[in-house]
Amino acid sequence: MLMKFEAEVIAAYGRHLRVRDATGGEHDARPFGRRVQAVCGDRVACEHDAAHAEVHVTEVLPRSNLLERATARGGAEAVVANLTQIVVVIAPAPAPDLFVADRYVAAAASLGIEALIALNKIDLLDIKAQADADAMLAPYRQAGYRCVTCSATTPESLAALRAELDDHVSVMVGQSGVGKSSLIGALVPNLDIATGALDRDAEGRHTTTSACRYDLPGGGAIIDSPGVRDFAPAIDALEPSSLGFSEVDRLSTLCRFADCQHLREPGCAVRSAAENGTLDARRYESYRRLRRLFEDLREKRGPGQRGNPARRPIR
Image (tube, rainbow, N blue to C red; front, side, top):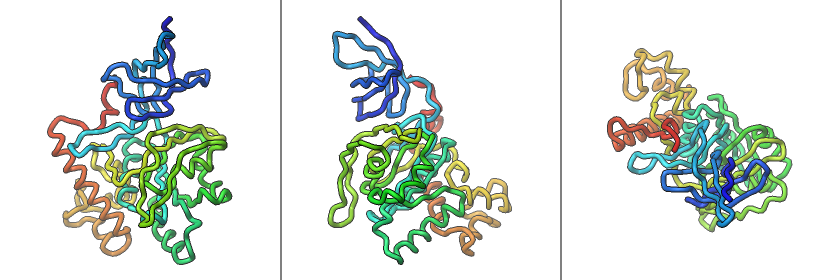
């Protein structure tokens, strides 16, 4: 007997899926055919023949959005779907790569969803390191981005993070070793996630091999994603607002030319602000790097090709 039902993908490792149906039942599943490409967070149509153990995913239902990473050849690889927020986790160790953090903020801006910066492992900070961390977060706060500090090992520090997660469907992203899985383990009761530790040279290693969704006690859900060493979102538009630089967007109204790219043009208010310290110099350099990166990716894709399949029909 063939049963048909809709479900949500709650874990994805390549083409191995775990789906949850409307009754809360969970099933191992595989996409039916190469054209069905489902990721964690997707709503999917499923079929199950009682003669077989596995469920077949026959269709990906319409998405509200799709987070993708750019590939080396300028294409796009799907990561997770149907989000309302990206939580960018950084930590004192491994040393934070804020240029990667900015790329996740850019991804959130391009999808029209919220971005949250979460500084984890604050229990490792002494007084000087705490001051450095505050200075690191200051440009984000000044630009209007929400920031919280927390530690998976200090329960009382998690209240602010919980409040920012309630009623959102968030994906937790960041470098390997920043403690994403440990945070989720502290936020979701009775959860057993395999977590790793930092090795002796404080270089993060991969500890999560698949994207997994977990329901939060206060409402909403969070998706744990594999740690990365680098990330570039698949973005087409190059305006500051779509790149996640709201401070650059605000200053751009003061530029001499309406189409100023804020790179070498005369009368650029953005460049002047970076030179006189009104605009954070590192954030401005990150903006320049992102523009160069996306222009390079566009050239690799060639004319007429788009970098974000979320805007294309879903198969």
